[in-house]
Image (cartoon, rainbow, N blue to C red; front, side, top):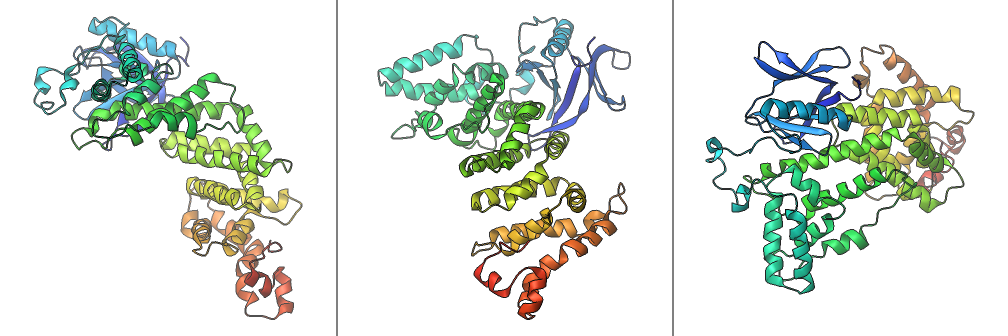
Length: 474
């Protein structure tokens, strides 16, 4: 048996309807005497500890989603998911579940999730919510009807289609989402949702998605699956955030599968980008190349900014792996270059990226800046570039300066250095800071309190600060 085929991540759904990563391991199905039945066992790949022990219940509704996910509920408000590294492993475990329940593995859900005991809980649901099973061809035929109604400008029919498609979304079924959000169908789904009967004129969501929201490839993405996944995720997120009305307290849980669909897509996108070292290496190379045009560099640094923001939706383990990949590829030396450039947009985006890195690991940033004097021939240090940007902020509101001041405070705060893994960090970093950076930080104060002769020791004059000229500051 291939280890990678059975390699899975275990997720549980928390009270905020967000998926928590419980760890990575290998799944097996075996008879457990204590549970008196065939059970799913997941043992951690790090130490072999038991991450999951779950009896395959004959009455539990298991769902297979996106070829590599199996999702189910073990008790009220306790949802579980297994995310497989390979489709073959997912299919293998799915067949075992279906075998225990006596179901056809071709199905993507093993049980009707609504039974008589739950009728009271769902009595207020919209009427369409009771249409649990729809034939596979339903959505495609429905969307063909939409095209006919739109060609004939049949507003009454279009209003009905809006209600139907919205109702189908609230069925919260992964199998339907797979069809609705496919390349062939998603724009027609968006089209149906434009014709809200409450609006005098239909919204133009398709026009925005196809003409206004342009997807820019800062470096050509050769993986067609990755490109398709990025397009799909953006459009589904748009449906959830912009098109669908804000759900009521009662309705919000009925879009949990939609939220999960987006979440797992994002995990997959970040993983695919991390694994494509050629792509990320090329992005870094162009970002730091002096020959790169300003407009291109702006696109590249904005890509990294969005990429970092994107990672904030991930669980800590995934986020740690993401930032470690960026660090290994040289994100900090790259930031040192772009933060010193004249382009205000580039500097602002670079500052945002730097803030993500400081938040992720202040120790990693400290370690890098302490190694700089030995690894570079010039006198430019990242932390002094940060100080320069803070002091020379041209914004009247000093928004950038305040942000950088907070980051600098995080880096030099001794309370943030009391880590058991590096007990000498506080002494070493503070000694470094006083030797290489303190005179730069205090230069503006001294520029206003000593004569011009003394100012020259710090490479800055009172006049330069008053005029905002910081070119010779670092």
